[in-house]
Image (cartoon, rainbow over all chains, first blue to last red; front, side, top):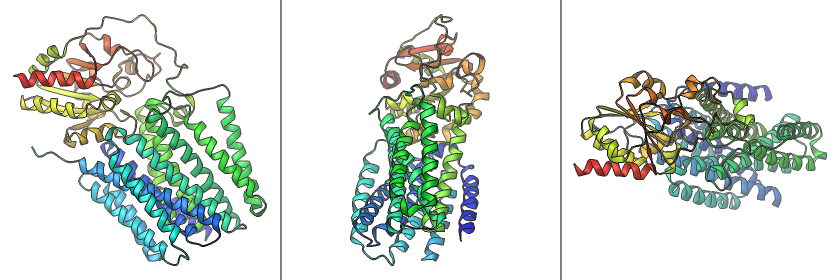
Length: 92
Length: 451
């Protein structure tokens, strides 16, 4: 299992390099905030912890994690959308 | 559940891919958001209790949505930094909670827990400090003190040492994890302290990368491949942006992170300045612009501070109505985050095909009648090209000094972030227009309206 996880990690890093190196500089900010929202994927782990019913400390940690990860996800996607909505080509 | 995760991971990849073109970017963001929703829904299945999950969703969504809609475009760098910090904090908490629930995880999981906590903590405090610096809650200047690098090195060594101890015998070492948390939080602050102003874009990219790596580490903890994929995509994208920023400043990542550029360390240039400064009024500027056939606008952080993007667009509209060709030249590190100027000009409804990159505009610069520099300084400093003794020598710049005339809108003669004298201001064909950029531009626009 462990080698496979590391294998996936390495491949995904290379995939990330390939994907991002083609983004034009004008889109760097939305790219950053958009990828930032993706890093909120840690919410998956947060949900697992908050929903495990494994004692109050774990639930509290999980609850806080869900809350902060949700701010990251919701805020990140919305703010990116707000920016991208402004990027348009003016009709001449 | 596995299928949902595979689809979610694919949607993240497709979404990022679509972000690479202005036409598809907005849909790309939506695609990636759908992926996130799928991942969340899939994870909700099989949980024992939901009340705290829902409470976290509610509070987090409200806080996230309100700040996302309220934030001004000029304040975007600090907003992104703050969101990023919360992502890091979440990863720290996930690692901690996992350890709390299973005190004797396998070695690999233990090491991952420690990494998630460490990277998450650095991301959190580092981002919060970046947020505070960018929003000027604390001074944005680099803070350097004696022995800083030694302390950082010791902390890092301590973090590694505790990591080894923790990984070897996790069940006996709850306190060590707490030490790890504390060290990571301190390390985050100390690593952003020596970085200021114009170096912020690099730091924000790096923190962005960290938050992805922290999420990937959390993925290792849970043996969840979808989290690993998503986290490492973000980690890779942050690193790439970092490299682009460093290249645009002709500096290495190590130099940005450890040197505290622009602090007292950089010696002031020789006091004796060459040539005299010629300053003109907005009215004079109007006459020159009215006669110009081609104008290139070079915005910098000063445009963001003065919130001048809308009046810039208004001026450009008048110029275009007058038959002048208008372009915007954007330096990669103008502003406080990558692409900062592009966002502001997009907000002012400037068409993105008018924005040109440094390498495109420079060869055409000698044919430009007027270059208007708005709140930019170091990125147009010819010393970077000519003066080998200059601290910014070698940094690629926008060659406004090669245009027929360069107008520089500036509050005073104060040097820029790097604390370097700018020979551009003393140039034969440079005209300074002192004052608040927004008011100056407004005055020129008023002249256009009068005719």
